[in-house]
Every structure is written in structure tokens, then in C-alpha cells.
Length: 346
Ligand code: SAH
Image (cartoon, rainbow, N blue to C red; front, top):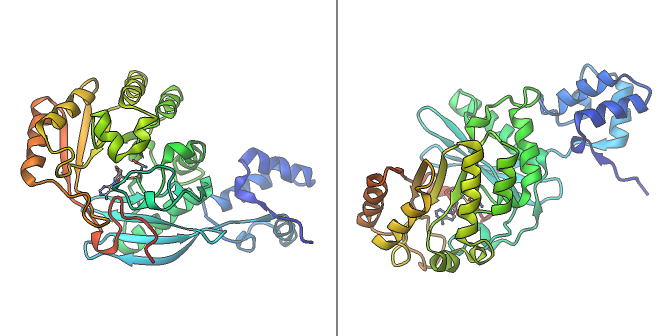
């Protein structure tokens, strides 16, 4: 029976250096291979041209490079690109490139499927199969950076963890991926250009605050009234608003970073003045920005985007109370690449 080869990108740089020393080689060889694996995104040991043939064969016998493969790329009429990304075990996740006049944003997945159960989200209908590894998250970013250079003649500028999955339910791997993305030995991007979006896991938000992470935080709130929020995001029963708010207060006290909220206004669910008041009362404790995002229908019409009047009512209520508001239009709807539409519909 063939021995199972190890995933070489699961090793830290130190572990790789130690491995070469244990093989009677120089620790420095570890640095060279590490650079090939991350900064140069090598897909094979054979392509590592400054490594001797003998060493490459030795690596080949001991390790695999589990690279993702962009299986299918779809382009929207508005320029948005959606990648179906095949993983080494044949599972598929999706990531999205969102171009604007001045930016290219990558929207990446953190899990195959999702462990949460938001009733308005297509990804929630796929059960969570597994967490993505750091390299699988990193590779999605590299693929989009390459596409940005190819189609838009500029590098990727921003990253949002708003694809499939709940990033804070795979926090350790997300953090490791961000470390690689921001390291000069990886992509060297500024953490200020990265936003992790969560439905709100209080314990992990506090942990992030303690670790003084440098990336931004967005919270998918959708309602600041427990009863309503639980009816559309059932896990709110486990992590109620009081706990979420306490964690966010802690986050703000440690990081002094503005908090972004994602919020969809639905007809008959949260389109009242009372709901808007609850929202500003929830977020007024810290500098906040609310993104009012457009609903992307995923089904039979149980959820419907509220009227423009209701959205304006929200906008006025928030602005009057000193909260920054943006009304965001969806991108990539024609290829099912918009928020909440990622569901491997193939
Ligand atoms: N689990 C994370 C990240 C993935 S969802 C989170 O909850 O933040 C990315 C964003 O899309 C979230 O704000 C989510 O609430 C929103 N969303 C989900 N389904 C949607 C839909 N059908 N239309 C518009 N936004 C949706």
C-alpha cells in the first residue's frame, strides 16, 4: 500500500526548515521551497527550478501540493466574475471578483457549505461539509488576483470574507490564511483592505479583539430585535443580541475600529420605523457604518425586498443619528454571484 503523502502547505516555515535539516540538507532550503509554495504559488515540485532534481524527487515522494483548480469561470454583464473552485477532494466552493472603477474586491469562501441556517441565504441550504484549509482560502485569493491582472490590468485591492461559510466558525484557518495574504512572503496585502464578515459569534469576536487583529469586521445583523432575528437567523437563539453587542463593545474598546453592519430590509419583516430605531440603538455605542444591501431572491418569494420608501426611512433614521449609511446595489446577479446566491448551482 502506498503511504499517504503529507500536504506540504500544512507545514509552517519553521517546520519546513526543520524537515530539510532532518534530511541532512540546509535549513535555508526550507525558505526556498516555502517561497515557491506561497509567494510563487507553485503547483508542482518540478517547477521549483532552483531546487536540485534529487531534492525535488525527495519532496515528490513525501508530500503533495493540494492546489485548487478553477473549474469554471463565469462573467457577468457588469464585469463580476464567479469562480467555481474545485478542491483536492473534489468538493466545490465559489469565489467572486467584484470590479469597480478603482478597486477589485475578492469575495472568498471559508467553508464548504455553511454551518449556519439563515433562512434567506442559498448557501445555508447546503450542509457544512468541511472547513477550508488556509491554503485553500489563500489560493482563491491568488486566483482572483491573477484574473484581476489579466482582465482589469491591476492587482487585487480588497478582500471580503463574504463567500460561502461562516468565517468565525473556521477562525483558526481564516487567521492563518490572512497571515499568509498579508505577509511579505505571501501576497503582502495590507490587513486594512480585508474584511471578515460574520453572523456574530460573540466568543470569537472577543478573541479577535484580544489578538488585536488588524483587519476589519462586518456583522450581518438584519434585525436588532431578538424575536425577529431568531425567526430569520435561527442561531440567534444561541447567540442572542445582548451577547453579540457585548462582544462588539469589547471589540471596539480594544481595536477602536469602526464596525460595519450588513442589513437587508425585507417587506413585512423589518421594514418598520420601530425596526429602524432598534438598529440605531443597537449600533450607536461605537462609530458604525450600515450597508443596506439589496435582497437577492433565492426562492419562492417568502422574502421580498422592501420598498424604496422603507429603505429611505432606514437611511434617514440612521443618518439623523449620526450613523454612516450606504445603499448597496447587487453585483453579478445574472450569474448567481451576488450575496447569498452562492450555492454551487450547476
Ligand atoms: N457567514 C458570513 C459571511 C457570508 S454571507 C456572514 O453571515 O456574514 C455574506 C452576506 O450576504 C451576509 O451579510 C449575508 O447576510 C448576506 N446575504 C445572505 N443571503 C442573502 C440574500 N439572499 N440577499 C442579500 N444578502 C444576503
